[in-house]
Image 1 (tube, rainbow, N blue to C red):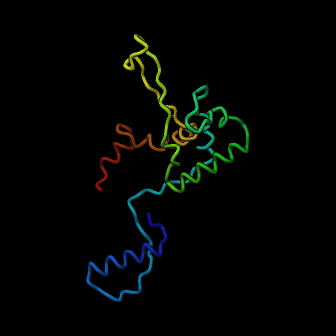
Image 2 (tube, rainbow, N blue to C red; image 1 turned 90 degrees about the horizontal axis):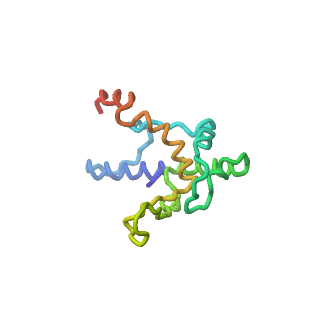
Image 3 (tube, rainbow, N blue to C red; image 1 turned 180 degrees about the vertical axis):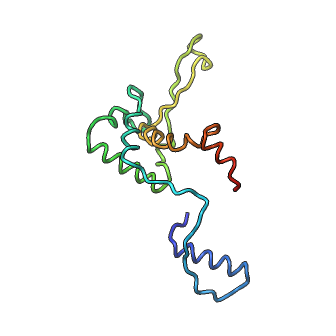
Length: 158
């Protein structure tokens, strides 16, 4: 995705010059851009702390081998590193590649242990991924179908 404003302006200038068959357009300036996309506030310290509180303990770690207990520990160093990681992901709007991977563990249900149908699979997800999910969930919950915000948005004509 192109994010440099000069490159974006040049792309738009070229596009409209070709579309309108106008050549020699040099004066293109950026004006205030209005978008339908809502402005998402930055991550607050309160959200960060609540996400830590909401992490479940005694769960198997994912592919990164970081247990939730390590994140929940009162270590300033660990929290600082995780905070920087989450802010980086938040600003880039892209998950790290290893967060897109998980470990599948077969859990025996009942019956013949040699039959795969007698097992269910669980995914072991990264604790840091779950941490980010704990931040996003309260922000997205008001927009789920059936919520007050969802009903109010149905009346807005887009």
